[in-house]
Length: 47
Length: 302
Image 1 (cartoon, rainbow over the protein chains, first blue to last red):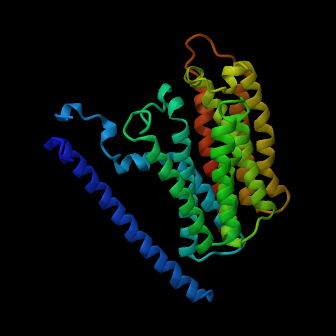
Image 2 (image 1 turned 90 degrees about the vertical axis):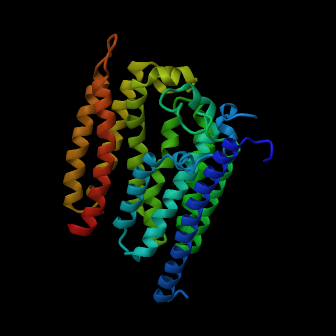
Image 3 (image 1 turned 180 degrees about the vertical axis):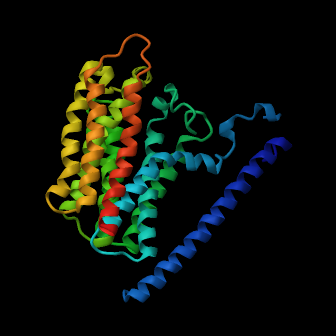
C-alpha cells in the first residue's frame, strides 16, 4: 500500500471499514438466528 | 497511481450496497411474497422462527441466483439501458467478487435450509438456483426465444419451497401454485419485451418480439393467458381452496384476460407509447401479488 497516495488509501480504508461494519452486523444477526432456531428446536423436541 | 484522479472504480473494493444490488432486491420481493404465501397456505403451521428462517433462505437463494445471473450476463447488461447501471457493467465491482458472492450465498442458503428446516425444502431450493443459473441464464437465454417460458420455472419454485418448508412434502396444491407462476411468466415478460424491444435487439438476446415479430408475440401473450387463467381457477374447482380464493381468482383472471386480449388484438403504430402493454405488465405484477395474497387469506380467514 506504500505506493498509494493518501486520498487513495483513505478511500480504500473507508470502503473496507463500511464493509466490515455491515459484515459484523450480519454475523451478529446470524448468531442470534442460530440461537433462536436452537431454542425452538429444543422446545419442539428435536433436540 | 499517483493522484486520486487516476483512481479507477474497480481499484476500490466494491461497496456493500453493490453486493445488495447484485441480489436484485426488487425481484426478491415477489419471490419472498410468493414463498411466504406458499408457506402460509400449507395445512401445517410452522413455528414463526422456523418460518422466518425458511423465507430468509428462499430470499438468500434468490439473491444468489440474481448475483450469478449478473455475473454471467455483465456483457449483455452493459449494452441495455435498463441494466447498464448495475454494479458489474458500471465497473463498480469485479466479476470474480460477484461469482464468489453468488456461489457463497447459494451454498449458505441451501445448507441453512437443510439444517434449520428440512431436506425437501433445501433440495427444491438448490434445484431452483441451479435451474435459474444453468438452464435459464447460461443455456437458454441467448439461444431461444422460448427462454423465459422454461426459465419461468425457476421463479415458480418459491411457493413450492414455502409449502415444503411447512409440511416436509409436495402435494397437488403447491404444484398448481407452481403452474400458475410458470404460465404467468410468458405474458408478463413478453408484455415487457414488447416495449423494451430495441434494448433486447441491441444486446442480441433472442426475445420473442425480436425473433418472431410483434404480431406473433401478441398472439402468444393471448394464448398463454388462457392456461394461466385455468391454472388460477383450478385449485378452487378441485376443492383445494374456498370461495374467497375462487371468487378472487375468477375476477382477477378476468381482468388479466381482458388486458391481454387488448394487447393480443392490437398492432402498434409508429412512435406508439405502448400503453396497453405497459398496463398489462404493471397489472401482471399486481395480479400475482393479489392471487397469492388470496391463497393465504383463504386458508387463514375463510
